[in-house]
Length: 197
Image (tube, rainbow, N blue to C red; front, side, top):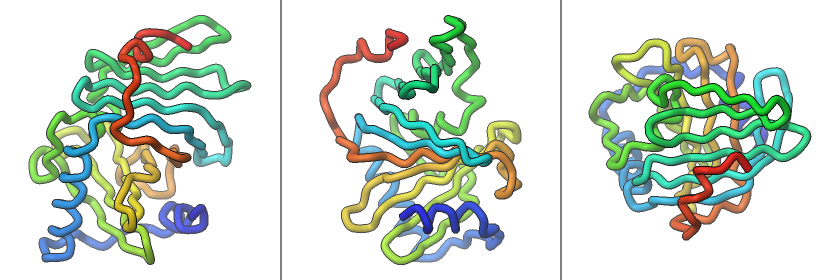
């Protein structure tokens, strides 16, 4: 699994995506998947472009447009998306910063109805063995980077994503999140998105 993800990062994905039956099949499958899965709760492992590794817990409620990543110690950070704002909180410094969610590739997760045919550029679709990956960027925003969503085929489910901070440079800065034992359509309280813990 990790070897495949590393290959996705270090091998440039330069081919253009053409409208063919196979690509259309995957686009429709991904749309259906997200539109049928409202929530997710999971442990995760994060790796960045310089090799730093962190772990933590992930929460998502798509229809409420909320997301949260709580990092395990010694990483003091918490990321919360709520009310179209991306909040970064540092537990050690007790400081928070806020930006618009639309400046982050994570906004793809929060479309109530995902439509890959509008306002989204399909940069690449890659199939290798039992995995499929799709790289997305926004058509109208050159500064929001890109995100690659990685799915297992059987069962078909999201297992990882990679954020590229320069959508035109696969060798630049990136952050990879790999989900560990995700629970989809899980039932947890909305209060989780209102606390820095």
